[in-house]
Image (cartoon, rainbow, N blue to C red; front, side, top):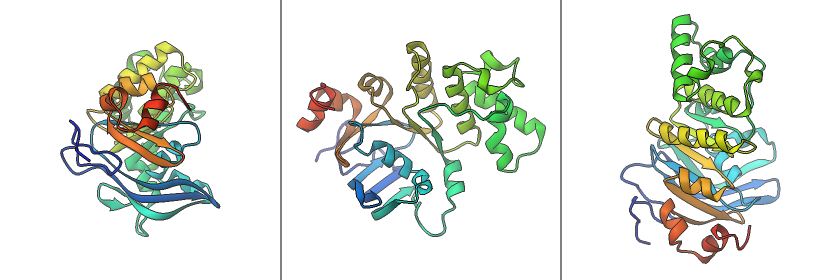
Length: 269
């Protein structure tokens, strides 16, 4: 299959102008006896936004959670075949520390999950866990992260207030600040705008575009308009299989597979 303008091929992946930061090869994944991912292979390049789209139950959130082993918390989950490499390292290898992996590959969930702590302590949480104790270092990191999450000007005078008092959109941006405070390489976002109003959604989408200058972002979304606005690359999954993976513009204007066209035009899903 020919490469598109980004250097990314179809379901086999591609180099996108350099070594991929995430490389998946022949992945089969199960929950108990149920196979949810079948023979997934793709390569995700650095400092771009990659969207995972597809109908409910197609395996996109499972695939996302494979990238930082969040599926480990499900006792029935197992990788039966294949490999996932992040930065060239097999993340399911025996020497990989899942906690360190999750520091490098941060996660923003569908529902904002602020801790019942102050805004400051929410953002500083991962740094404290990582052993940062010096107040000046924490202060600098909290301010930098809140600025990068486009929230600093709204909360700088009330960092000691409970994060639970923030609006839904502010809470999600604070969770993004918490994720980036530990300076990960990758940020995974699972339906980050679910339940937010249009204005808050727009702020998150604008933020995603700004953050890709510093981080690689992989986002799961059901919103086709959001995928087309936010992402550089799009992977379409159906029934646990990767149907097509290409530049977002091509996926939405000239898909190679009829199933992709049927899904993005609303004929099924």
